[in-house]
Image (tube, rainbow, N blue to C red; front, top):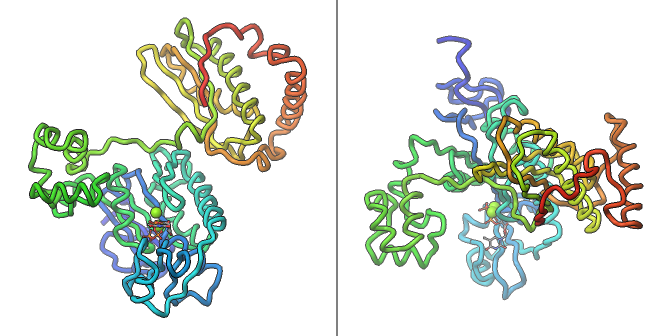
Length: 434
Ligand code: TTP
Ligand code: MG
Ligand code: MG
């Protein structure tokens, strides 16, 4: 056995490498070892907090630690969630409260404190954005993440980065999460639910079809109770049965849903992890009369668009933490590139600089017919653009921008132009969105 061989896995508690055959961590003795043949290749993750509302309440009141806790609204209400102690007794989300109390009479019932949960949810989401700009929240306590290409940034594989994240949430937030890691969204989400709480499950490409074969059809995304009942009437209860059917047949029987069944049953899911939708971003874009390939042509457009975005952010008193560059090539292929800023910004200068450095990497002779810039991961303007201790010029540029904003307000937008936008204002027909 060679000492230089890459470690077969790692310890989820102390993150030390773990040998392929070890049963406990050599460093800390923990049995929570993570190993999987595809561990270093998988990048799509789904993270979901464990018994979210209940975990937050337990964190804030240590006396509740070992007690069954139910979060929900009053005696006649329903259960929002229950801690895992209460779940062992049969309590479930959406159960009428009286039933829950029949099953678990000694439960501590707490009214939901939504403001607090939103705050904690945001805090965790911010931590997710420290891992990758590609975070797609699904609800208050869960999100998809695509960690492709983050190895150099974090000096670790996506799997190890995720294990470190789970630990960080426990240390800094005081609640636990479960992680699912796979090659696609469907199976990442399935995986995160597999060994809750404090779970970390991996579903690799090689095992996907066999893994799905014996699972109920209800596991498939979009198959709710009603549709599962329809399938059951047709004699289909297990995913393995769908694996035997051909696409045309499924399409004929169930329309577009049939197509989804065909692909997901085979573990084929090409949906990308994408940033939150347009409503949660501010952007501007322009389509050119001619297509452009060079920085000389593209940068001025980018500058003008950055200023539009900044203007709208300032008007709404919001700021964006992630800058998104959008390009459409001559042959209508779209490229989007994101980068997270150190802090939320509403400054044209900062957005432009970030956009420019993203753009530089795309200059490869390709002709572009459209360029757009925007920000997402929006927040209140209050914590935007903190004084920059490293880049001294930034403060001056910020002051200059504030001065220009004032003049623009006074004289209209065309009266002040920076070097980059000068004389370029009429070059394209603008189309804005955001
Ligand atoms: P979930 O992630 O579905 O559940 P959970 O975090 O409580 O438990 P798990 O460990 O299984 O993930 O939902 C997140 C929060 O959303 C949950 O804590 C409370 C709220 N919620 C409701 O209010 N009603 C519901 O029916 C469900 C399912 C959740
Ligand atoms: Mg949850
Ligand atoms: Mg959830």
